[in-house]
Image (cartoon, rainbow, N blue to C red; front, top):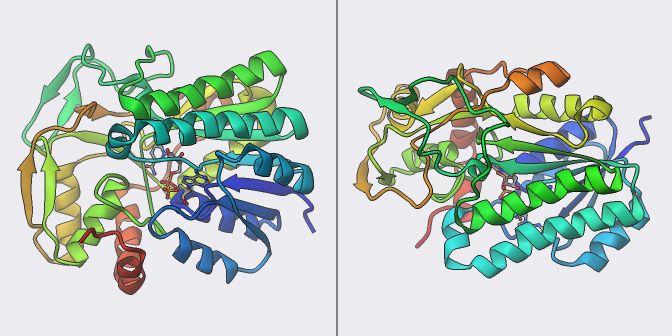
Length: 348
Ligand SMILES: NC(=O)c1ccc[n+]([C@@H]2O[C@H](COP(=O)([O-])OP(=O)(O)OC[C@H]3O[C@@H](n4cnc5c(N)ncnc54)[C@H](O)[C@@H]3O)[C@@H](O)[C@H]2O)c1
């Protein structure tokens, strides 16, 4: 019996639920800390509670430092995955204070609980590619179905930080604090900066989780809005590949501590909206109904991660192609239509 304990903030969210199930299978005690604010979180928790293993659920908010501290003191986790967040740029623009309090102050609270109570634990913080801003100085080219970088394959961690929008600022603040706590306090803290992660148990809404959102809309015959011209490109990562990265980052903590890693599908696994539509329309045999609107604030035309550093430091590279990953997501979505409807991913 493995006696290790992992604390997962945001453990009832998409990435958190998949990570919790993954560590339950490895016989960890899994402590999920989540305020269940996200559409689908309650449904994910119900599912998790039906999995085998040692699961502890704590309904809590990362803005509540006292509670985080008590949980750290009581369960003494060896590993911490800090995933809880206000996750949408749109919401951050309408309510920047709440966004700051959850993402910046909430992350500070998690780090303080770590420093004061469990300083030997290893912590991974989920940052975002938004810390690199719009990257308007990187030359791009436009082809029939997509934008592409003109001179580079992907963005490396050396690219200058340029926090964009309240969400970029609040997540970026958590990113820099996490790195600094390794430097100043000698903690085992690591940052990974991700672009689009997708997979089962993702309750995509219009503002976040775009691959799942388009799957949902297609299955429920809802029209979607394309902000911009549909040629915007992101590298995309299937959840199982991300879980492997977590394992490797933790396993190689002496090497990874104090560092930031770009984690995504890389240049091999990237998609524009039109390319995504092609795959989904083939899978479903249906046409997606869409209209256009203006570009959204801070939206990069292309973002693709350079994965060289992750490969070099802990031997990680993604394996699951968008074609395969989307098939799995689409199947999960079609088999869980009632759950998705109940979760309230569609407004109105
Ligand atoms: N999914 C992606 O493609 C992606 C891309 C970039 C960054 N990220 C980051 O990865 C992390 C996880 O993303 P996800 O896709 O699983 O999101 P998610 O919304 O599915 O999960 C976040 C979870 O945090 C919980 N939560 C929100 N506010 C909270 C609070 N104040 N206290 C406690 N719990 C709270 C929610 O209920 C939810 O269960 C987030 O930090 C997000 O910013 C995700």
